[in-house]
Length: 89
Image (cartoon, rainbow, N blue to C red; front, side):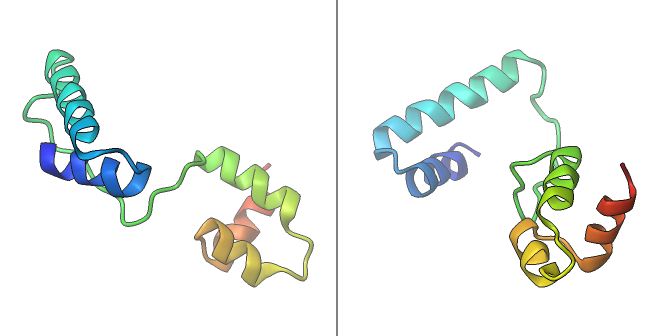
């Protein structure tokens, strides 16, 4: 876990190896202190920075009826999700 986090911090955030290692260790230590040792978590195929509600609001504001493919690609959703966002206010 430490190696994975460290590599992600180096390649994803551009941190130096030693800094990434220290941050990874701190995150793991924090998780253990919070009682998460031994827990299993789902690792999504695609990280999304927006919550589902935020994503729906962004889709509603950006979709203009002619840019379906662009909106789908930008938010990593299918056309059904776009139309559901439009109708689920």
